[in-house]
Length: 185
Image (cartoon, rainbow, N blue to C red; front, side):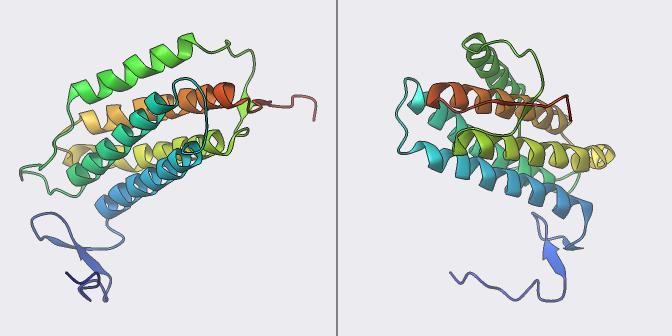
């Protein structure tokens, strides 16, 4: 299979089922932003491959699950309304995020102030992924009337919370500094 098809050389791409749209189409922006977030989660995971802390495998597995579901979210966003979605997002995917958020949050010191993205490279990448997911969520909300599955917005909203807690959890496990927001500048 060739990597290049030349079918996008004039600024169009295909959605699932072959519908052609401009590359600036809001659906392309939405699933492209999810893909960008997915890549940043992958960077965060890659920083953990050589790390050593209790629960590391659980974090790596949770991030792998997130990457898989983000791919599914992209498939939902690339599927035109009225067509069957290959990998449909389900409430259980949101429930899994919430369960993990609660578990990790129990192990963390409570926050007393705002923190800035910082610390271990994996944590910093997770903070970056969180901001990309927030952007994806904003784009997807503009598509809301065209979405078959309204769980997409909920999943992205919960995912940004998950990534924030995951960043804090990794920082704590790896001894990364949580940089507080300076209020005296």
